[in-house]
Amino acid sequence: MIARSTPRTRWVAGTTGTVPGDVAGRALITGITGQDGSYLAEQLAGDGVEVVGMVRPGDEPPASCRSLIADLTDAGELRRVVSEVAPDAIYHLAAPSFVPTSWDEPGPVLDQIAGATATLLRAAVDLPESARVFVASSAEVFGDCGVSPQSEATAMVPRSPYGVAKLAAHRLVGAYRRQYGLFAVSGILFNHESPRRPEHFLPRKVTRGAARIALGLDDELVLGSLDAVRDWSHAADVMCGARLALAAEEAADYVFASGVGRKMPSGHRSRRRKSFSRRSTTGSRTTFRWFPACCASRGAESQPMKRRWR
Image 1: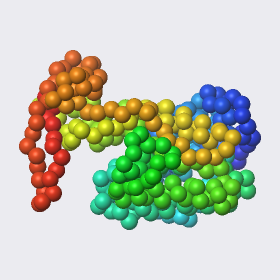
Image 2: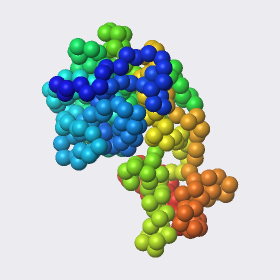
Image 3: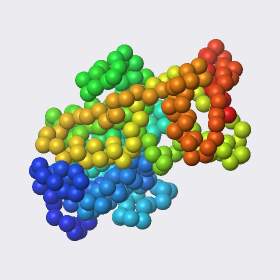
Image 4: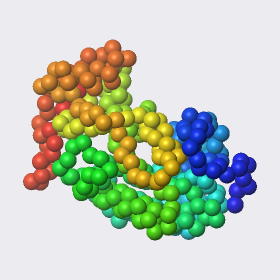
């Protein structure tokens, strides 16, 4: 067990740093090397919280805090990390995050998301002084719910293995809260982005593609359907919300979103066209135009219409 350098904080209303009733002397963050984990670690450390990160084998551990290696699919390792760290708060952010790949390997995805969540919740219960737990869920749990906008009370009808796994983790949080009185929160996170986002996600794909075109490295950027509406927030804001959720007087589940749906630009809607592309390309002083490409097909399954960006 790690020797405690700071006293355990009593969870009461008040002000610690920038978040009322903030967490404590020590926080364990799974997925600390990811977009969300890196912002959260900076926020907590900046407010004097001792941060310990959990990283998967092969990842480069952050230099700013202590880190322990563990695989999400190894229940014994996860329990060992929680027991050794003895945290006041656990922020469980680690999980596969790219939805399409869950169709290829649904079993491992379910294990990494729902299985790891179950293990960490049980480990938190078994601590001598129970930790507060934040579990990052996803708006994918709503799937084809038929209601927009969604809230915590909206029916959840996931439509991908990833969404099903996130829903299982979400329900486990509620089950442990009711069964053991554990202060556990499920955060249903809508899209949240930052410059730290991997390049295969849409906003980074657009900004990177715009920069490459401006530099003369590429001639065009091909995107999928432009008809989808998404709610985008900044990852740092969402992580501040996670801290507020654990600082609340009672545990509950929350939707984390801006409340504003945004659509990608369309060549047939000149005003809307400017909303995303102009913001993405202002710095490059590059003008882009949209034109439709042919619709590809795979067997009898038609693929979404694409747009090429020049």
